Each structure stands twice: as structure tokens, then as C-alpha cells.
Length: 503
Ligand code: BES
Ligand code: ZN
Ligand code: MN
Image (cartoon, rainbow, N blue to C red):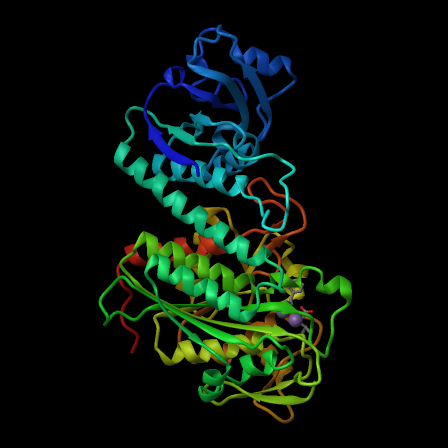
């Protein structure tokens, strides 16, 4: 386990295996580079043909001549000074994280590359390192990369910085980043091992560890509670469905909570409307929304914002079998609304409908769901961006700016009411598919049927939840999006003054 520390010591004086110094693109060196008196590091960097673009690297061994206490200096390109924000720090720190994990001690002036908001910069560096160092190796009998050795990672700040708030930022980053890796582990775990019951047990263990209230609903309790959507999707699998309920109390009981939910399909074969084998390859990730809500709840429990937050996460395995839901079947959801299942592969909305209706009964101040819901959203926005649908302007703005601030951007798509007619059913209140065009919108309109008048936002994360190639601080596979967005949103709501009570 790596210890993260903060210090305002001068970079030349810090003993460590590697001192990481940023270099800007352009004439200026980065913070700390000039303090290395024994060599013209910048000249070395330029001689190697490097210009300071984000992610460029040059390792300079200290043969005793550099005049620093470090055994080596790693020069790290950061891009143009004026364009460096928290996200660039996260990306730069993430890019070198694997390499640094092989050293015992590291110190870096990276956080000083952003002039304003030092706490945010410190947090970004630590987050970038932890997220970039992440690997999913549970099923590898031997690590190809060799063991991680990093004992101590020291973020060096400027002497004028407030050390207390910088240390708090280090702690916050560790909490947030380990909550993201908790989510990534769940998403990367194969569906053979991560059944709905296993997901529920992982949630229970997490809740007990961090002090959240937890209740797991089994299939018998779901039947008694009228959760026909969750049961209908799960009935083709030998692994029965669950509903995972969590509560965090950070404010008076009289304060309506923020309510979270996420799609927890532990494997989506499509059911009887079966997918192609290629279409199924990544479908262990179809519980990415559920796992992100669990990760966010973990972080919230540890960060203790002054707000109440509840979660109700539906989980089922969507399998074809003699007991599976058939196209044409009608399901009765929590609260009594019915849906006609014309395509068993549009299952996420069926399980979410129950959870949304259940949460709306509790009159929360807002409901936010995250779901790997539609391929159509990926067609619209690509793999980087989540799609946002909302019935409430302030809520939409809060989520979009939270995502932007943490480097998990989303983009709003319209909840275009005229398309509601596309999901009219001949036999039930609503049907579970529209036509091909506008598929992300008709999916969102289906969900909207179940939230009543509670302000609601839906994040379609089919694109960004899972990557098919590595990013700067996420390897191939689960990303943990949108854990950091949800956490930033909830923290923002806790510090904002409570909105006027709705009539
Ligand atoms: N889990 C999928 C959506 C998905 C597809 C996520 C690819 C990530 C990558 C969802 O359950 C699904 O199958 N949606 C269908 C809906 C259609 C049948 C109306 C889709 O998008 O094709
Ligand atoms: Zn699905
Ligand atoms: Mn599906």
C-alpha cells in the first residue's frame, strides 16, 4: 500500500527514488525544474527531441551531479501552461503511474503547475496516480509487469499553500480514487462470479465497512413488493435477482434525500431476443451504473457531506431459457404500471422502472440514475461522453458541471415528449422499445414514466463505462465513470443552500 503525503519542501532537498518534474510546452520550464542546479535539465529535454506535450517523458539519472537528493529526475510533459487544468494533471500523473509503481519512493511538483486552486490540483495528482496505476489482475496467476513497490508518493506544494487543506485534498483524493477502483473491480469481474447475489454481498460488505445502512431484497421479497420488472428480467437465469438498498444520513431526518440508482444487469445476453456473440463480449459491464452508484455511496460515506443520500439498485441477470420472459409478455412494475416487453434485450429500463418508482415513493429532492442503457447513445455521443436526460434544469446543470469539473464530461440530449407516442403499447401502459431512430430518447422517455413529478436525471453511460483501449488514467476495461461525477454532484448539493421546498 502506498502512503500519500504532502510537503512544502523544496524539490531539490527531497530524498526519493524519482523526482517527477513537469515541463510545459513553450519557453518556460515547469515548477521545480530551475531548482535543479547541477544540470540544464531543460536542454536535455529539448535535445531528446521533446517539446513538452502532455505525457512526454525523459528520465535523467542522478549520478551525483544534479544537486538533488533524488536518485533520478523524471521530466514529464504537461502541454501549454495556459491550458493546464486539474484534468491535465490527472492525465499526466496517470500516464506515468505504472512506471512509478515500480519505484519505492516518488515526489512531484506536478500540482504546482496549476496556479489557482491548489487543493484541487493536489487532489487531481493523487487521483491521477491511483487511477492510472490501477490494474485488474485478480484472474492472473502471475503478474507480467512485476510487483508494485511504491511505498511513498509525496505531493510537493508551494510554501504559501495552506498545508491543512492540501493534506485534506490528499485524503479526499485517496477516498474518491479507491471508490472508483472499487467500482472498476466490480465491473471487470466476470458475470460467472458477479451474480446479482454476489453484487449484493459486495455491496453489503462495503456498506458495513464504511457505515452505510443496507438492506438486500431477495426474489421472494421483490415479489411481495411488486417489483415485476426486476423479476421479469431475472426469471430466465438460475441466478435470482436482487434489489440493493443503501442509506447515508448526513443531515436531519427531515431533509429529503438525494436518491441514486443504477442499472445492475450482471450479464446481458439479450434474453430470448438474443444478442450476437460479439454483442455479448463486453456485457459483463452491464452493471456499470449499479457499480458506479455503489462506488459513489462508498465515497460519500467516507467524505461525510451534510446531506442525506439513499440508493436502490436493481440487479438481475438477463438470460434466455425455458423460464425467460418472452416477447409479448406484460410485466407489472412497482407502483402498478404495466409494460409490454417486445424486445427482451431492452431490459435495463424494465429493472430501472421498479427502482425509480420505489425511490419516487420516498419523495426525494432528486433522483439520479446511471445506466449502460442504449447502443443508440453511443452512436450519438461516442465512447467518451455520457448522455444526460432530465426533467429539471437545475439538476441537469449541476450534473453537467460536476462531470466537466472532474474530467468525466457528459452532454445533454432532449427528453422530446412527442416521441412518447413511439412507446405506446396496444396492450399495456407502455412498451419497452420504440423504433430504431432516437433509441436513447425513447429509452429515457420510458424511464420518465416511473418518476412521477420528482426532479429526475438519467445518465446513459453505455459509452464511457467501459473502454476498448487504454486511456491516460484508465486501462482497457471498466473506467468507473460516473463515480466522480456523482460524488462531485452530491458534495456540491451538500454545500449549496437547500433549494426551496417543492409545493
Ligand atoms: N446493455 C445494452 C446497451 C449497450 C449496448 C451498452 C452496447 C453498451 C454497449 C442494452 O440492454 C441493450 O441491449 N439495448 C438495446 C436496446 C434495443 C433492443 C431497443 C440496444 O441498444 O441495442
Ligand atoms: Zn443491457
Ligand atoms: Mn440489453
